[in-house]
Every structure is written in structure tokens, then in C-alpha cells.
Length: 238
Image (cartoon, rainbow, N blue to C red):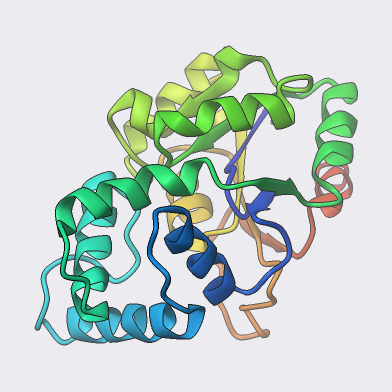
């Protein structure tokens, strides 16, 4: 029986800078640390970086989650953009700058959390983020989720998809992994990883309809397109 539900933060409960495109969001981030590149320039550099990583021409991972991988990605992108300053220092600025961008919750975020709390579920947030994100997370959702139930990878020094972080988060809510569901926008790092860590359910929030009807989901992983679907989903499973 599911008694606790943990949520990813970024792009699950809301998004930085609001409803704008990914290139526009990246341009906003880069401008915030004094880099006047356009969204198109950054997007092209990021695409080139991923292409080179996939071909083995650059070290790293295509879609990083851990701090060290994110810093590597920022350094590589800056070099591809032709940045001539201290690449390592500017990558650190970008990493921490992302955490303090203006944050806008999705329209259904607070209402969903409130409905689930009223239904008796224990709620938490588990986010791959820098500790600098905590004030924003608590300001947005602290009235619905206690601070001790907000688990940030940068504070724990371990990142999703490591099973031990999911286990630690469940324990923080006073639950066993088998009593927990995890909700996130990343199919692999959130939903699949949670189930692999022993969670009863992984809920993939596919707001962009990336599945397009052809993604085969493993057992105990389900797809939704809005947070408002969670209450109905759980009631059908009860």
C-alpha cells in the first residue's frame, strides 16, 4: 500500500523562468552570469556537445544529472561557444545560477499536493540540485511539505538515480521504499530508477507527450501528462 509520495522538483512541480522554450531559458541563465549568448547559439552548442559525447569525441554524459557531470557539460558548452574567460569558474556560476532562477510552479502543482496531503499521503521532494535551491523550494512548497521532507542531492552528496538516495528519502518520510511512489519528469532517472530502488510505483510526468505512443514502460512505471491525474491514478490502484 502506498502511503508516501516523493516528487522531483525542477520540470515536475514547476519550471525556471516560467513558460518559455528551453533555448530561451538557457539564454536567461547565461545572461544572469554575464554571458550575452542567444538561445539559438547556446542550443546549437549544447547539441554539438551531445553529438560529440555520443560519438566518443568528448568525455562525459549526454544528459548529465550529477554536479561533476553538469560542470563538465557547462565547461564543454562554453568552449564550443568560444568563451575565452575562466571556463571552470564560469561553469560553477552557471551551476549555482540555475538554482536561483525565478521559479514558476505548474498550475496543477499546489492543488495536487494539497489534495494528496488531505487524502493522508506523506509528501516529500527529492531533487538533484545544489543546496542553493532550498530557499526557492521551501518558499514555493514549504506550506505543504515540511523542510525535513525536502531532500536535495547536493546536501546529501549523492544523486539520483542511485538507489541509496531513494532509500534515504523514503526513510526521511518514515516509510519503506515499497510504500512509496515517485513522481518525476525524467523516465529513466526518476520513474525507472525509483522502481529499481524498490519503490512501489514510478510515475513519469510526460507533459511534452514525448512518449508519442511508442515507449514501452516496465512494470510498476506509469505515464501521466499532468499532475492532476495522480489522485485518480492512486484511487484506481487502491
